[in-house]
Image (cartoon, rainbow, N blue to C red; front, side):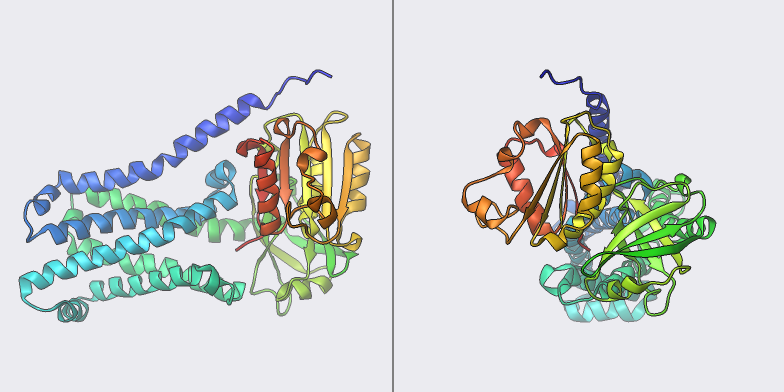
Length: 458
Protein backbone atom coordinates (compact mmCIF):
# COMPACT_ATOMS: atom_id res chain seq x y z
CA UNK A 1 0.00 0.00 0.00
CA UNK A 2 1.42 3.37 -0.99
CA UNK A 3 2.10 5.70 1.90
CA UNK A 4 -0.10 8.80 2.01
CA UNK A 5 1.46 12.27 1.74
CA UNK A 6 2.97 13.70 4.89
CA UNK A 7 1.24 16.94 5.98
CA UNK A 8 3.63 17.31 8.93
CA UNK A 9 6.90 17.76 6.97
CA UNK A 10 6.70 21.55 6.55
CA UNK A 11 5.73 22.23 10.18
CA UNK A 12 8.60 20.00 11.34
CA UNK A 13 11.09 21.93 9.20
CA UNK A 14 9.85 25.26 10.53
CA UNK A 15 9.97 24.05 14.14
CA UNK A 16 13.55 22.77 13.81
CA UNK A 17 14.66 26.07 12.23
CA UNK A 18 13.02 28.02 15.06
CA UNK A 19 14.80 25.86 17.64
CA UNK A 20 18.18 26.41 15.98
CA UNK A 21 17.59 30.16 15.94
CA UNK A 22 16.50 30.24 19.58
CA UNK A 23 19.52 28.20 20.73
CA UNK A 24 21.85 30.70 19.04
CA UNK A 25 20.64 33.41 21.44
CA UNK A 26 22.74 31.95 24.28
CA UNK A 27 26.18 32.28 22.62
CA UNK A 28 25.17 35.60 21.05
CA UNK A 29 24.28 37.19 24.40
CA UNK A 30 27.48 35.81 25.92
CA UNK A 31 29.53 37.27 23.07
CA UNK A 32 27.85 40.66 23.50
CA UNK A 33 28.62 40.68 27.22
CA UNK A 34 32.33 40.02 26.63
CA UNK A 35 32.49 42.36 23.64
CA UNK A 36 31.17 45.26 25.70
CA UNK A 37 33.98 44.64 28.20
CA UNK A 38 36.66 44.77 25.51
CA UNK A 39 35.01 47.75 23.81
CA UNK A 40 35.31 49.57 27.13
CA UNK A 41 39.09 48.97 27.24
CA UNK A 42 39.15 45.49 28.71
CA UNK A 43 41.97 44.33 26.44
CA UNK A 44 44.47 46.35 28.50
CA UNK A 45 44.17 43.89 31.38
CA UNK A 46 45.62 41.09 29.24
CA UNK A 47 48.75 43.03 28.25
CA UNK A 48 50.52 42.64 31.59
CA UNK A 49 51.00 39.75 34.01
CA UNK A 50 50.18 42.15 36.84
CA UNK A 51 46.60 42.62 35.61
CA UNK A 52 45.80 39.40 33.73
CA UNK A 53 44.23 37.82 36.84
CA UNK A 54 41.74 40.72 36.99
CA UNK A 55 40.99 40.39 33.27
CA UNK A 56 40.38 36.65 33.51
CA UNK A 57 38.24 37.14 36.60
CA UNK A 58 36.08 39.78 34.95
CA UNK A 59 35.57 37.80 31.74
CA UNK A 60 34.71 34.67 33.75
CA UNK A 61 32.22 36.68 35.79
CA UNK A 62 30.57 38.18 32.72
CA UNK A 63 30.14 34.80 31.02
CA UNK A 64 29.02 33.13 34.25
CA UNK A 65 26.48 35.83 35.07
CA UNK A 66 25.09 35.77 31.54
CA UNK A 67 24.67 31.99 31.65
CA UNK A 68 23.20 32.17 35.16
CA UNK A 69 20.50 34.54 33.91
CA UNK A 70 19.87 32.16 31.00
CA UNK A 71 19.47 29.35 33.54
CA UNK A 72 16.85 31.33 35.43
CA UNK A 73 14.89 32.10 32.27
CA UNK A 74 15.01 28.42 31.23
CA UNK A 75 13.53 27.43 34.59
CA UNK A 76 10.91 30.22 34.57
CA UNK A 77 8.54 28.13 32.40
CA UNK A 78 8.26 30.81 29.74
CA UNK A 79 5.53 29.62 27.32
CA UNK A 80 7.54 30.49 24.18
CA UNK A 81 10.47 28.38 25.39
CA UNK A 82 8.26 25.55 26.61
CA UNK A 83 6.28 25.38 23.35
CA UNK A 84 9.46 25.36 21.29
CA UNK A 85 11.76 23.04 23.24
CA UNK A 86 9.53 21.37 25.80
CA UNK A 87 9.79 21.40 29.58
CA UNK A 88 12.24 18.47 29.73
CA UNK A 89 14.69 19.91 27.23
CA UNK A 90 14.61 23.40 28.78
CA UNK A 91 15.27 22.02 32.27
CA UNK A 92 17.91 19.67 30.85
CA UNK A 93 19.83 22.64 29.47
CA UNK A 94 19.27 24.49 32.75
CA UNK A 95 20.93 21.61 34.63
CA UNK A 96 23.81 21.34 32.13
CA UNK A 97 24.69 24.98 32.69
CA UNK A 98 24.80 24.62 36.49
CA UNK A 99 28.37 23.34 36.93
CA UNK A 100 29.94 25.60 34.24
CA UNK A 101 28.30 28.63 35.85
CA UNK A 102 29.66 27.67 39.27
CA UNK A 103 33.18 27.13 37.90
CA UNK A 104 33.06 30.49 36.11
CA UNK A 105 31.91 32.26 39.27
CA UNK A 106 34.68 30.60 41.28
CA UNK A 107 37.19 31.75 38.63
CA UNK A 108 35.67 35.23 38.78
CA UNK A 109 36.06 35.49 42.55
CA UNK A 110 39.54 33.94 42.48
CA UNK A 111 40.74 36.35 39.79
CA UNK A 112 39.58 39.40 41.72
CA UNK A 113 40.99 38.19 45.04
CA UNK A 114 44.38 37.43 43.44
CA UNK A 115 44.45 40.86 41.77
CA UNK A 116 43.56 42.78 44.91
CA UNK A 117 45.96 40.71 47.03
CA UNK A 118 48.86 41.36 44.64
CA UNK A 119 48.30 45.10 44.96
CA UNK A 120 47.66 45.20 48.71
CA UNK A 121 50.42 42.78 49.72
CA UNK A 122 48.00 40.63 51.73
CA UNK A 123 47.65 36.87 51.43
CA UNK A 124 44.55 35.50 49.69
CA UNK A 125 42.63 34.67 52.86
CA UNK A 126 43.32 38.06 54.45
CA UNK A 127 42.37 39.84 51.24
CA UNK A 128 39.10 37.87 51.05
CA UNK A 129 38.26 38.86 54.62
CA UNK A 130 39.02 42.51 53.89
CA UNK A 131 36.70 42.48 50.87
CA UNK A 132 33.92 40.88 52.90
CA UNK A 133 34.30 43.08 55.99
CA UNK A 134 34.63 46.43 54.25
CA UNK A 135 31.89 46.25 51.65
CA UNK A 136 28.32 44.99 52.10
CA UNK A 137 27.88 44.37 48.36
CA UNK A 138 30.91 42.06 48.31
CA UNK A 139 29.63 40.24 51.39
CA UNK A 140 26.39 39.56 49.53
CA UNK A 141 28.37 38.40 46.48
CA UNK A 142 30.22 35.85 48.62
CA UNK A 143 26.93 34.68 50.11
CA UNK A 144 25.55 34.33 46.58
CA UNK A 145 28.50 32.13 45.66
CA UNK A 146 27.81 29.94 48.70
CA UNK A 147 24.17 29.55 47.68
CA UNK A 148 25.21 28.52 44.16
CA UNK A 149 27.57 25.88 45.55
CA UNK A 150 24.69 24.46 47.62
CA UNK A 151 22.44 24.37 44.57
CA UNK A 152 24.99 22.49 42.44
CA UNK A 153 25.79 20.01 45.23
CA UNK A 154 22.11 19.20 45.82
CA UNK A 155 21.65 18.67 42.09
CA UNK A 156 24.09 15.77 42.08
CA UNK A 157 22.24 12.49 41.58
CA UNK A 158 23.63 10.87 44.74
CA UNK A 159 22.59 13.83 46.89
CA UNK A 160 19.27 14.50 45.18
CA UNK A 161 18.16 10.92 45.74
CA UNK A 162 18.33 11.51 49.50
CA UNK A 163 16.17 14.64 49.45
CA UNK A 164 12.42 14.94 49.29
CA UNK A 165 10.99 16.94 46.42
CA UNK A 166 9.88 19.63 48.87
CA UNK A 167 13.36 20.13 50.38
CA UNK A 168 15.06 20.05 46.98
CA UNK A 169 12.59 22.61 45.64
CA UNK A 170 13.14 25.01 48.56
CA UNK A 171 16.90 24.84 48.09
CA UNK A 172 16.58 25.66 44.42
CA UNK A 173 14.28 28.58 45.13
CA UNK A 174 17.34 30.08 46.81
CA UNK A 175 18.76 30.59 43.32
CA UNK A 176 16.57 33.67 43.13
CA UNK A 177 18.11 34.95 46.34
CA UNK A 178 21.55 34.32 44.87
CA UNK A 179 20.68 36.43 41.86
CA UNK A 180 19.50 39.31 44.06
CA UNK A 181 22.50 39.06 46.39
CA UNK A 182 24.97 38.98 43.53
CA UNK A 183 23.62 41.86 41.50
CA UNK A 184 24.66 44.78 43.67
CA UNK A 185 28.45 44.43 43.53
CA UNK A 186 28.35 44.46 39.75
CA UNK A 187 27.13 48.03 39.76
CA UNK A 188 28.96 49.34 42.83
CA UNK A 189 32.40 47.79 42.15
CA UNK A 190 32.55 47.61 38.38
CA UNK A 191 33.38 50.67 36.32
CA UNK A 192 31.95 48.86 33.33
CA UNK A 193 28.47 49.43 34.65
CA UNK A 194 28.85 53.11 35.45
CA UNK A 195 26.00 55.42 34.54
CA UNK A 196 25.68 56.27 30.87
CA UNK A 197 27.48 53.17 29.56
CA UNK A 198 25.97 50.71 27.12
CA UNK A 199 27.00 47.88 29.44
CA UNK A 200 24.90 49.25 32.28
CA UNK A 201 21.73 49.31 30.17
CA UNK A 202 22.52 45.94 28.62
CA UNK A 203 22.87 44.19 31.98
CA UNK A 204 19.86 45.98 33.44
CA UNK A 205 17.84 44.67 30.48
CA UNK A 206 19.09 41.10 31.06
CA UNK A 207 18.19 41.24 34.74
CA UNK A 208 14.80 42.72 33.89
CA UNK A 209 14.08 39.82 31.51
CA UNK A 210 15.16 37.22 34.08
CA UNK A 211 13.32 38.76 37.03
CA UNK A 212 10.27 39.54 34.91
CA UNK A 213 10.11 35.95 33.66
CA UNK A 214 10.25 34.55 37.17
CA UNK A 215 7.69 36.92 38.64
CA UNK A 216 5.37 36.73 35.64
CA UNK A 217 5.40 33.06 34.71
CA UNK A 218 6.12 31.42 38.08
CA UNK A 219 3.97 33.64 40.30
CA UNK A 220 1.54 36.08 38.70
CA UNK A 221 0.17 34.05 35.78
CA UNK A 222 -0.47 30.88 37.87
CA UNK A 223 -2.32 32.98 40.45
CA UNK A 224 -4.42 34.75 37.83
CA UNK A 225 -5.23 31.54 35.95
CA UNK A 226 -6.11 29.56 39.05
CA UNK A 227 -8.37 32.35 40.28
CA UNK A 228 -10.04 32.87 36.91
CA UNK A 229 -10.71 29.24 35.98
CA UNK A 230 -11.84 28.06 39.45
CA UNK A 231 -10.84 24.41 39.26
CA UNK A 232 -12.30 22.07 41.86
CA UNK A 233 -12.26 18.30 42.25
CA UNK A 234 -15.44 16.83 40.78
CA UNK A 235 -14.92 13.13 41.56
CA UNK A 236 -12.22 10.53 42.15
CA UNK A 237 -12.31 7.14 40.39
CA UNK A 238 -10.15 4.15 41.33
CA UNK A 239 -8.28 2.81 38.27
CA UNK A 240 -6.11 0.14 39.86
CA UNK A 241 -3.87 -0.62 42.86
CA UNK A 242 -2.95 2.78 44.40
CA UNK A 243 -4.04 4.59 41.22
CA UNK A 244 -6.93 7.02 40.84
CA UNK A 245 -8.21 9.38 38.18
CA UNK A 246 -9.08 12.83 39.51
CA UNK A 247 -11.77 14.58 37.50
CA UNK A 248 -11.79 18.36 37.86
CA UNK A 249 -14.26 20.94 36.66
CA UNK A 250 -13.81 24.64 36.01
CA UNK A 251 -14.69 27.35 33.54
CA UNK A 252 -13.08 28.46 30.29
CA UNK A 253 -10.52 25.67 30.35
CA UNK A 254 -10.32 25.71 26.55
CA UNK A 255 -8.55 29.08 26.89
CA UNK A 256 -5.85 27.71 29.19
CA UNK A 257 -4.07 25.54 26.62
CA UNK A 258 -4.85 22.15 28.13
CA UNK A 259 -4.39 19.51 25.41
CA UNK A 260 -3.72 15.79 25.44
CA UNK A 261 -0.14 14.97 26.37
CA UNK A 262 0.61 18.14 28.31
CA UNK A 263 1.04 18.24 32.07
CA UNK A 264 0.69 20.82 34.80
CA UNK A 265 1.82 21.30 38.38
CA UNK A 266 -1.30 20.78 40.47
CA UNK A 267 -1.75 22.10 44.00
CA UNK A 268 -4.75 20.68 45.88
CA UNK A 269 -5.85 23.08 48.61
CA UNK A 270 -6.50 20.45 51.26
CA UNK A 271 -4.86 19.75 54.65
CA UNK A 272 -1.35 18.25 54.54
CA UNK A 273 -0.96 18.61 50.76
CA UNK A 274 -1.57 22.27 49.93
CA UNK A 275 2.09 23.23 50.47
CA UNK A 276 3.34 21.17 47.52
CA UNK A 277 2.48 21.07 43.82
CA UNK A 278 2.97 17.86 41.82
CA UNK A 279 3.42 17.36 38.06
CA UNK A 280 0.74 15.10 36.55
CA UNK A 281 -0.14 14.58 32.90
CA UNK A 282 -3.59 15.08 31.45
CA UNK A 283 -5.09 11.62 30.92
CA UNK A 284 -8.13 12.44 28.76
CA UNK A 285 -8.89 15.06 26.14
CA UNK A 286 -9.98 18.16 28.10
CA UNK A 287 -13.13 20.14 27.45
CA UNK A 288 -14.10 23.74 28.19
CA UNK A 289 -15.26 22.68 31.65
CA UNK A 290 -13.41 19.45 32.55
CA UNK A 291 -9.88 18.09 32.83
CA UNK A 292 -8.66 14.74 34.18
CA UNK A 293 -5.38 13.50 35.59
CA UNK A 294 -4.41 10.01 36.74
CA UNK A 295 -2.28 9.70 39.87
CA UNK A 296 -0.30 6.83 41.34
CA UNK A 297 0.65 6.77 45.02
CA UNK A 298 4.44 7.05 45.07
CA UNK A 299 4.92 8.43 48.55
CA UNK A 300 4.60 11.85 50.21
CA UNK A 301 1.37 13.67 49.38
CA UNK A 302 0.55 11.47 46.37
CA UNK A 303 -0.80 8.91 48.83
CA UNK A 304 -3.12 11.50 50.36
CA UNK A 305 -4.34 12.43 46.88
CA UNK A 306 -5.87 8.98 46.58
CA UNK A 307 -8.62 10.21 48.91
CA UNK A 308 -8.90 13.87 47.95
CA UNK A 309 -12.49 15.04 48.44
CA UNK A 310 -14.86 16.38 45.77
CA UNK A 311 -15.13 20.15 46.04
CA UNK A 312 -11.45 20.61 46.91
CA UNK A 313 -10.08 23.71 45.22
CA UNK A 314 -7.16 23.22 42.81
CA UNK A 315 -4.47 25.71 41.79
CA UNK A 316 -2.24 24.92 38.86
CA UNK A 317 0.85 26.03 36.95
CA UNK A 318 0.96 25.22 33.27
CA UNK A 319 0.17 23.40 31.11
CA UNK A 320 3.69 22.45 29.99
CA UNK A 321 5.46 20.12 27.60
CA UNK A 322 5.51 19.28 23.90
CA UNK A 323 4.45 15.65 24.30
CA UNK A 324 1.60 16.47 21.92
CA UNK A 325 0.53 16.08 18.33
CA UNK A 326 2.16 19.44 17.54
CA UNK A 327 5.56 17.73 17.55
CA UNK A 328 4.44 14.98 15.18
CA UNK A 329 6.42 14.44 11.95
CA UNK A 330 4.60 11.60 10.12
CA UNK A 331 1.15 10.11 9.50
CA UNK A 332 1.99 6.93 11.37
CA UNK A 333 2.15 7.04 15.14
CA UNK A 334 3.05 4.51 17.85
CA UNK A 335 2.07 5.28 21.44
CA UNK A 336 4.02 3.31 24.03
CA UNK A 337 3.54 3.61 27.77
CA UNK A 338 4.65 1.76 30.88
CA UNK A 339 2.67 1.72 34.13
CA UNK A 340 1.39 5.16 35.08
CA UNK A 341 3.05 6.43 31.88
CA UNK A 342 -0.06 5.13 30.14
CA UNK A 343 -1.99 8.17 31.44
CA UNK A 344 -0.81 10.65 28.76
CA UNK A 345 -0.77 7.81 26.21
CA UNK A 346 -4.50 7.37 26.78
CA UNK A 347 -5.14 11.08 26.11
CA UNK A 348 -2.97 11.06 22.97
CA UNK A 349 -4.73 7.95 21.64
CA UNK A 350 -7.99 9.84 21.92
CA UNK A 351 -6.80 13.09 20.36
CA UNK A 352 -4.38 12.14 17.56
CA UNK A 353 -5.85 11.54 14.13
CA UNK A 354 -4.84 8.36 12.33
CA UNK A 355 -6.04 6.49 9.26
CA UNK A 356 -6.79 2.75 9.57
CA UNK A 357 -3.53 0.88 10.15
CA UNK A 358 -1.56 4.02 11.11
CA UNK A 359 -1.97 3.78 14.89
CA UNK A 360 -0.23 1.30 17.21
CA UNK A 361 -0.53 1.38 20.99
CA UNK A 362 1.72 -0.68 23.26
CA UNK A 363 1.07 -1.04 26.99
CA UNK A 364 3.92 -2.35 29.14
CA UNK A 365 3.78 -3.38 32.81
CA UNK A 366 4.96 -6.04 35.21
CA UNK A 367 1.41 -7.33 35.73
CA UNK A 368 -1.97 -6.97 34.06
CA UNK A 369 -3.18 -4.95 37.06
CA UNK A 370 -0.55 -2.30 36.30
CA UNK A 371 -1.75 -1.71 32.74
CA UNK A 372 -3.59 1.36 33.95
CA UNK A 373 -6.36 2.76 31.71
CA UNK A 374 -5.66 0.01 29.18
CA UNK A 375 -9.34 -0.81 28.73
CA UNK A 376 -10.03 2.78 27.71
CA UNK A 377 -6.98 2.85 25.45
CA UNK A 378 -7.98 -0.38 23.70
CA UNK A 379 -11.51 0.87 23.08
CA UNK A 380 -10.19 4.10 21.54
CA UNK A 381 -7.60 2.34 19.37
CA UNK A 382 -10.08 -0.22 18.04
CA UNK A 383 -12.50 2.58 17.12
CA UNK A 384 -9.70 4.11 15.02
CA UNK A 385 -8.86 0.71 13.49
CA UNK A 386 -5.50 0.70 15.21
CA UNK A 387 -3.50 -2.15 16.76
CA UNK A 388 -3.01 -2.72 20.48
CA UNK A 389 -0.32 -4.80 22.24
CA UNK A 390 -0.23 -5.62 25.94
CA UNK A 391 3.22 -6.69 27.16
CA UNK A 392 3.50 -7.90 30.76
CA UNK A 393 6.15 -9.69 32.78
CA UNK A 394 9.48 -8.94 34.44
CA UNK A 395 12.00 -6.81 32.58
CA UNK A 396 14.29 -8.43 30.05
CA UNK A 397 18.08 -8.18 29.92
CA UNK A 398 19.00 -7.99 26.23
CA UNK A 399 16.21 -5.55 25.39
CA UNK A 400 15.10 -4.22 28.81
CA UNK A 401 11.93 -2.46 27.68
CA UNK A 402 10.44 -5.83 26.65
CA UNK A 403 9.26 -8.66 28.92
CA UNK A 404 11.95 -11.20 29.79
CA UNK A 405 10.87 -14.02 27.47
CA UNK A 406 10.61 -11.83 24.36
CA UNK A 407 13.80 -9.98 25.22
CA UNK A 408 15.95 -13.08 25.64
CA UNK A 409 14.62 -14.50 22.38
CA UNK A 410 16.13 -11.48 20.62
CA UNK A 411 12.90 -9.58 19.96
CA UNK A 412 12.92 -5.82 19.25
CA UNK A 413 10.60 -3.09 18.05
CA UNK A 414 10.95 -4.40 14.49
CA UNK A 415 9.06 -7.53 15.53
CA UNK A 416 6.07 -5.36 16.40
CA UNK A 417 6.30 -2.58 13.80
CA UNK A 418 7.83 -3.06 10.39
CA UNK A 419 9.81 -0.12 9.01
CA UNK A 420 9.82 1.73 12.37
CA UNK A 421 11.87 4.60 10.86
CA UNK A 422 8.65 5.69 9.10
CA UNK A 423 6.75 6.13 12.38
CA UNK A 424 6.55 8.70 15.17
CA UNK A 425 7.03 7.15 18.62
CA UNK A 426 5.56 8.67 21.79
CA UNK A 427 7.06 7.13 24.93
CA UNK A 428 6.12 7.65 28.56
CA UNK A 429 7.25 5.72 31.62
CA UNK A 430 10.17 5.31 34.05
CA UNK A 431 13.47 6.86 32.93
CA UNK A 432 15.42 3.59 32.66
CA UNK A 433 12.63 1.95 30.70
CA UNK A 434 12.39 4.88 28.29
CA UNK A 435 16.17 4.87 27.86
CA UNK A 436 16.08 1.20 26.84
CA UNK A 437 13.15 1.90 24.52
CA UNK A 438 14.98 4.78 22.83
CA UNK A 439 18.12 2.64 22.40
CA UNK A 440 16.07 -0.01 20.60
CA UNK A 441 14.44 2.60 18.36
CA UNK A 442 17.79 4.12 17.41
CA UNK A 443 19.16 0.68 16.54
CA UNK A 444 16.13 0.26 14.30
CA UNK A 445 17.01 3.48 12.46
CA UNK A 446 14.34 5.77 13.92
CA UNK A 447 15.48 9.42 13.65
CA UNK A 448 15.74 11.27 16.95
CA UNK A 449 13.19 13.89 15.89
CA UNK A 450 10.58 11.10 15.66
CA UNK A 451 11.14 9.94 19.24
CA UNK A 452 9.01 11.93 21.67
CA UNK A 453 9.16 11.39 25.43
CA UNK A 454 8.09 12.88 28.73
CA UNK A 455 10.14 12.16 31.82
CA UNK A 456 8.84 11.74 35.37
CA UNK A 457 11.96 13.28 36.96
CA UNK A 458 12.59 16.38 39.06
